[in-house]
Length: 200
Image 1 (cartoon, one colour):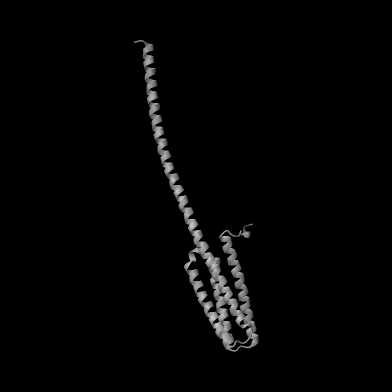
Image 2 (image 1 turned 45 degrees about the vertical axis):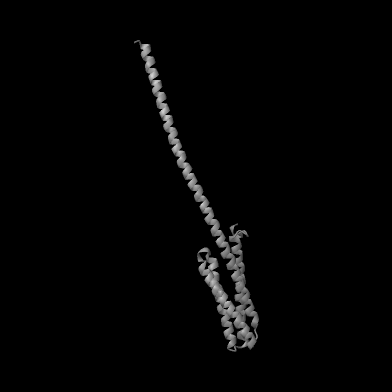
């Protein structure tokens, strides 16, 4: 055998080995790439499903909060109207029997609605922020003031004390009006109806 034949055989052998090795490497690389692609496709699908589930949960939570905020603001509005009606029943005059009966009925309704409001707040605590929870205490104070006002009238207090106490009730009503408007504003901001101007 001559050197050229040996050299050609060695080169052919090396080339065929290289081609076989390159083919094997190519097939292995393709297999690894496909495995990686499948893994990323699976991860991508899982992330897509997780994102959709998070969006669904947020939408459901938003719907729940919307309903709770609407009901809360409506209840505060009703309580505010009832308290205002009660304060108008007396003015600063000594009550007669008819007014006293009207007042008792109106006050019982206020107490009943406030009790329902308190229960509503308790049942929806997880969906409400502190600003809404604090309203319960403020309104509770007003309900107590209205009751005390009536009890003082029943004790035949003098006109100066009656005027003084009526003034306190009127101030409480102004605070309740302010509280109602603040809660309404906060609810509308939270629901995206109004922009929060404090962010500037």
